[in-house]
Length: 383
Image (tube, rainbow, N blue to C red; front, top):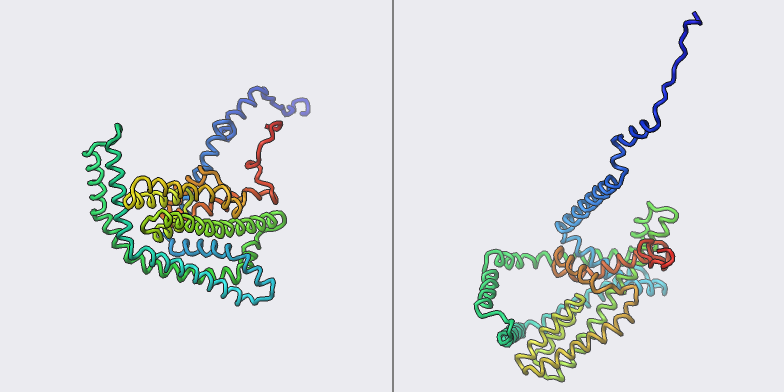
């Protein structure tokens, strides 16, 4: 029987045929160039969907998100003061109440100054600005490329129709109920700020519990950098806004421009919106000067605004905020646009400090003074 037993035969496939079968396997479709592109596209879509869902959720909860964000930024601004008081033995609750009282007094004082300076003279300020725009339009009609009167009338009619439309009216009526929302948000802001100032370190340590080793060190470094950047931004911007307002107020008083105090208050407020705010404030001041004192005085006002902004941008702001807060103008404009679209005026105010905090985190991602690998300058030899 052994003579007729057949040994098992091993069939050897042609190597080229095996390679061809492997190449045609379904999973290989995701490993070539187009497959990797498709994989990245799917990943990007997932990230965009998650970010969009997060933004949608925050917009639905603005009553909570905005006070929370503002409280975090204000707490970062007061953090050096809190550390100074705690280092000198001041009890935590006493230091918290002092800082909270100072915050409420500052916010109340700014609000009272706005109401006092603008309320009684708002109609005159609005009328002067409107007359200034009319004067500019009349002057522009003499230019070769100026729009004709029919086009101007059409634009004005469109604006009038929008103002008198039901949509605009409903928004104005909704503004009445917004007072209750504002009060609720302000109370929530004060309460959250109290806990941030009092128990901020404990809250941060709780959030750091999941991290271990190098991840813990990185998370703590990121937190310290975020607090530093946000605090520097608030303190620096408030100081710069105050200096801008005082400088422009002195210039307006010397040039005898009416409504100098309301214009200075608007300069202070709009200074919290980089680039755009200074332009709007200077334009409004120039329009008022144009109506009240003529072209020459308006040009002097423009010169004063430009001079103050240049001194602030080239000397005061770098000294107060440092290089870590320096963002490119393109980044600032993009952040302002995104913030305005998502959150209106509040979004425009918060967009730049958030962008600066993100950039600060990137700058210390791999260590103190060591940015993330993709954000480092390229060595010409390595590149």
